[in-house]
Each structure stands twice: as structure tokens, then as C-alpha cells.
Image (cartoon, rainbow, N blue to C red; front, side, top):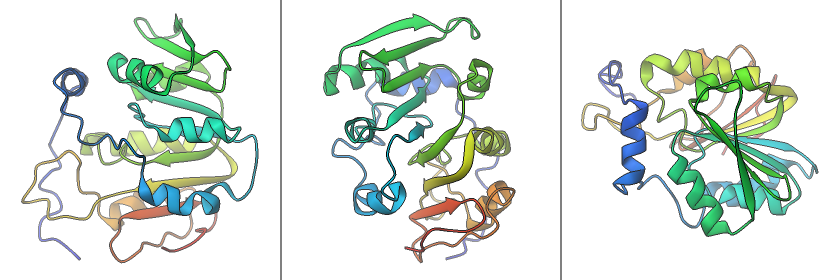
Length: 225
């Protein structure tokens, strides 16, 4: 469905402090305690039977899916501005962990599981490239693109694409709703905007009729759902 005014949210801005306050005030309805159902359904398609993948979670919060991938033998890296959210992940999922400052980013920290297969960076996502974080085989973008301020989307997409290895797969979930009736976040990201942001690496993009979830892959899409 095409909505009459997709630009209505264009100037909406949430500060990093406001996102941190959401965690403090428990306004975290975006967190799914049982994990994302569509990821469960298409997990095999997303992983393609490959082992030892590096999987990136932008704006990870305390997503339980990070533990799923780690338990499958993959290496998980996330970034989250809320230290509270990161600590809750380790408390609830119960791996032992350590923390240390990130020297390249004043005030930032990295939290690592003792098994070293989960590393969560507590910092602004746009500062992350300064850490020489490396490249990733997979990105699971469940609620990051729709949370980023609309004016920052291009910078966000460029950051994500810079982190991808050849042969990557990028799994993106977006929402379809009338943006004149809800200020966001989550923000409404129309199909044309997604194509504009990601077509540098993804020649063809397709969407399911509800636009609930999108698979992106270098040169082609894996599957339309």
C-alpha cells in the first residue's frame, strides 16, 4: 500500500539520551522475549547451512537471537547505546562476560562473553567503524533501520554496507503503516527508500506483499517471502 505522505516523519529526531531513557523507564516494547518469529521461520534460509559465520546485530538491545546464533557456533557482534540493555542481555542469557573500555571511542565499552563468541559494543553506531570491527557474513536488522532517525538513514546504510563481506546476506525487517497516524519510532521506511539506500550493493530488491521482512543479498535476493 502507498501512503499519502511518506515525508511526514522526515524531521523526526530521537537523541541517544532519549533511547537510553527508554531502557531506564522500561519503554522497550520493541524487545521480543521469545525472539523474532520470522527469523525462526527463515533461519535456515538465512544461514544457508554455513558454519562459523560472523553475524552483526545493529542496535541489538538484549535480543535473544544473539544467543541463538552463538549457540549454533557463529560469532556475534552487536552495538547498542544502552549499557543497561547490554547488561540485561548477559544477566538474562547467563554467559559469563568481561568488559573493557574501547580506546578508539572515549567513554565507550565492549562487553565480551568468556567464550569470546559474543561481543557487544556500547557506543553510538556511527562511531563503530573507528574500532576496526572487521567485516561480516550476515546482518540481522530487526529494528535498527526503522529506529534510526530518518535524516541519518543514508549514513546508516553506508555504514552497514561497509561492514559486509563478499557473498553477504542482509536480513531486514520493516513495518508497513500509515506514517501520518504514528510519529515513530519505529519509523515507516517505504520500499523506494530501501531500494535507494541499498541498491549500491543489491541490484534487485523484492518485498513480500506486507513488506514485513526483506532479504537482501549482493547481486540478487535470496528469496521472496
